[in-house]
Length: 291
Ligand SMILES: [Fe+2]
Image 1 (cartoon, helix red, strand yellow):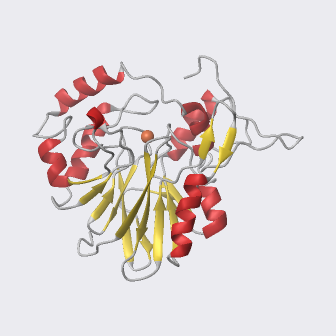
Image 2 (cartoon, helix red, strand yellow):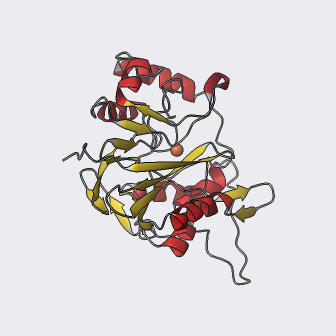
């Protein structure tokens, strides 16, 4: 049951390096919160990892005396690295992702030629979530909606009058997410978007990314009504066939995200780096012609 009378307090943290938005979603009736889609900073050219973005989130949580119940991932991101384990270490909370992470782990376990020590059963996460599940953040309920298409494991988190849509929709002038990664499917994405647009018109929708199309300022919040009326890919009743044709033609022109190689290796491990070698050194791989 949707608790649309509940209005969570949402604080957004925009990451300029990857155009990702991390959300702290607080229960108005308690100090409990969830953190959705955190970011670990990487200077890929230098192989250097830092935590400025995550530290800003930690500062916000601590300054406001919040208790972190959950660290949620809308999906295995291909454009930034998750900081969930770093946040868990500092703030607590359980790490949750969609149950089809196992499909993603299987696909990219092969791409990165991982050995048997890389488990493909989702055991790196604290909880695997599936459609219809509900988890609690204080007195609030987070309803899990499985919204595949961009990836097989994509989730939308519905919290009271707000929904965190991951990479399904972008802002109305940005359209929708690509559906050409392994396991992606434009038709499934259309169906998932229709489910999101089936939420009440006034539902606040929070994007995972914004790129400020045509030079506008960065924005990340809209509504179901606004997307239905104005989304450049699905607004005004675009048909499934037209969407699939548009999405596939467009995806064929897109380059790989800059950080896909480090992102997948880290995010399929719930944000952990690959295990260190016998000298205590950590490496990421680059599969040649593997993607
Ligand atoms: Fe994504």
